[in-house]
Length: 105
Image (spheres, rainbow, N blue to C red):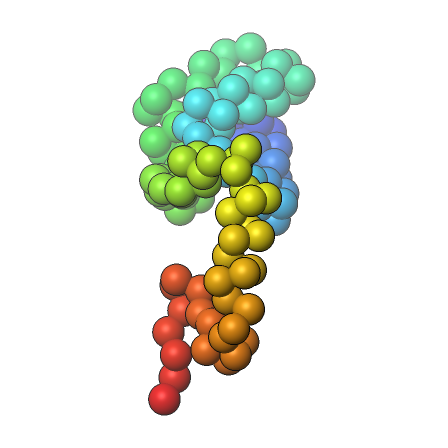
């Protein structure tokens, strides 16, 4: 029913994915309303039914992103980095792994 708004939103989503942006249903709804206003589609409401159908048509899924970054003590980062460097200085770099890496034998 609102092809111009949906096309504009689709282009915006593609660019957001390419830029590595994370967005929510609320952001999608807001952007859709912005585009509808821009293109004078006054009857567009961005209802939850419209959003569900739009996501199905464009194969958009919702994922919860869990990161530990919010729990990091930013103020102590420099001293922690220095302490880690001191701890690791006696190890051969080939024997140092990131927590999400595994060594191959």
